[in-house]
Length: 396
Image 1 (cartoon, rainbow, N blue to C red):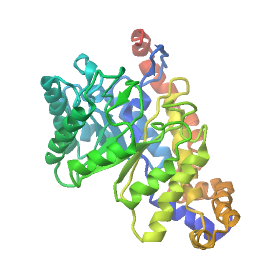
Image 2 (image 1 turned 90 degrees about the horizontal axis):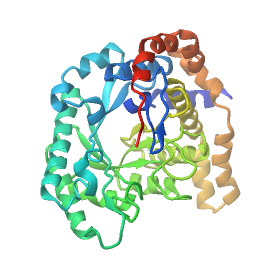
Image 3 (image 1 turned 90 degrees about the vertical axis):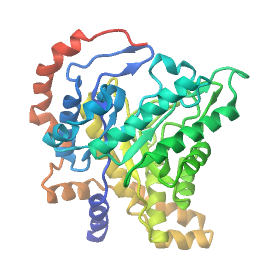
Image 4 (image 1 turned 120 degrees about the vertical axis):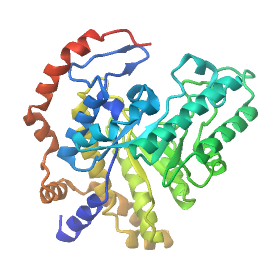
């Protein structure tokens, strides 16, 4: 790679950060069972410690997404010490994720529940999450809803839409400063007949009706097979409504596989649309890049390092697309030349330039090797193995 391309890679990486999910370091499973890992994090402090280690060897993960019910079970009261604990491990609290899908009262929905008392409880939890975010210094409140129905005729879809709009508007009114609501969507699961926020258009409409600080969050696993996600990204960019991503990969549906493990070209194409938008408009979009993955079989920390380094590679490759040449080829309908602009960038081996960038920042050139040689895994395995073994239980 010549010096000019290396400089482009370095410049891109200087501005790239990706948020780690706290739940990615804990034991998780499927509806059929949970496989324990001896080194999995069992407390919020352990999650922050693991995230801090990943950040220390990659340099691009300064924030950690928190799930209120799992990480802050006492709500606002338990949020007070998060800043200090996170700082101890070199990270900060990132997006705050309310949980309005796990409790028994949410059997028929949260903000879309036909019971007004349940809707009020869900809204109260979301408002508490906004307050928690203010306490932890977090900007984004990330909202995903499991609401929907499984059988025709069992839910008033129009009425539920109005309840959602009202609840999100109240949450928006509670935001302070630079805080944002990120509205996520998902076509199915656990609802299999209709989902209240099933696609990006529904999320867009609800975000717009909530207020100017609400944006759409795109989870790369939350689409039908063969959906053109980068087109959705392009439209949301054009409307200034793209707030962030939950990155993962999938073979079938919301598989939560490590990013780039199935279709790395898709993530590259998404990053390309963002770079192309910035080049064409001169505007730098304010996008939160976040990981949302479930590592049931891979080692938790290894899978996270693998994901982060893959994200760096795909982001760096997208930065190499010749935008001027691409725009000219598009204008002239030179199809092969236009497509080649993307394929040439994607085929470029950016790993040497990434290693040079890491070395210039005082970071390990090989984060995975640094982790494996650090002794960190052996230490935390010894500290946590007994607790994880004691917690073995069925997962339904």
